[in-house]
Amino acid sequence: APQQSVTVIGLGPMGQAMAAAYLDRGYHVTLWNRTPSRADALVERGAILADSVESALLANELVILSLTDFDAMYEILEPAKDAVAGRTLVNLSSDTPEKARAGARWVAGLGGTQLTGGVLCPPPLIGTPEASTFYSGPREAYDRHRTALEVITGTTDYRGEDQGLAALMYQLNMAVFWPAMIAFWQTAAIAGAHGLTAQEIAPYVTENFAGMGHFVDFYASRIDAGNHAGDVDRTAMGLASMEHVVHTASDAGVDTAFPEAVHDIFRRVVDAGHGADSFSRAVELMSKPAA
Ligand code: NDP
Image (cartoon, protein in one colour):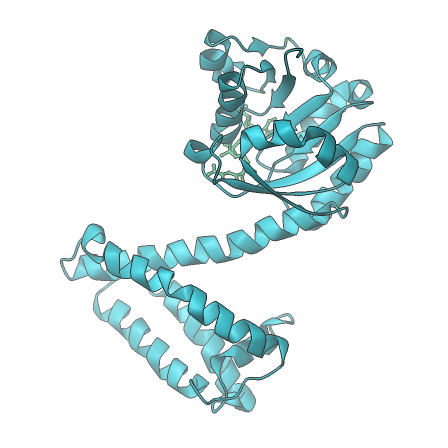
């Protein structure tokens, strides 16, 4: 079989790990990055650093973009617009569903094809079978490049033709991930004020996270059914409980902004007259802009 080849544009920690994964699999890899020095280690391993964006695009039909956001794509490709025609641009940069759709229209207008992706693992897990990426955009392009995409993460989850879907699924994951990790930092801060290390509390936090699946499943069907009965929990109880968390934090002399934000949501549900309902009632409050 002829040697497989790919272009990778964007060499932050993610793009570097992706290019390295392709080199590991024997791909011919062409690189471009705004800061060329980030390609050094990869060039030493046999990758080619293109001397322009245009030649990076012309080198391969398959082009992986790993950038901070979609605006970076315009900034990079604008001066080499003519070379986009006939390329498949796999944009793995984080951004909103709307930005992903607009990017796809822009690429299509230049005669290229975009596939949007949302990678769900940190750089060290790139190239491993368990790691997973959401994709959306033309099914044909996904199918045609699937083998190459599975070099980046062994698992791929194609969500549909709408370019916004992969970005949406990625953002939904981030909306859970960042606050959940900040909740851990919060507990580490409170525990630290009491002389407990992060490592000492880590097993308890891990167990707490591991039990979350049960709550997610339980409340998901109730939310879909519009059932916010206060038979297993009441928002008034949740409000009191969050108040205890806020006070535990303030008594410990640590920042209280994060638990206060959660407390505020409980308070608004109670103020709206739903204190006797489950705290899942908050979904309704959160389904429109805050008053
Ligand atoms: P970085 O933000 O470090 O990647 C930055 C890359 O984008 C660099 O190549 C940088 O170039 C380039 N870039 C940014 N702005 C511009 C611009 N205006 N013009 C030209 N180039 C630009 O991110 P990561 O590598 O960590 O991640 C890449 C994407 O993957 C991000 O969207 C991130 O959200 C997502 N992601 C990251 C994960 C992680 O754990 N790191 C996990 C999952 C997804 P230069 O080197 O010149 O600065």
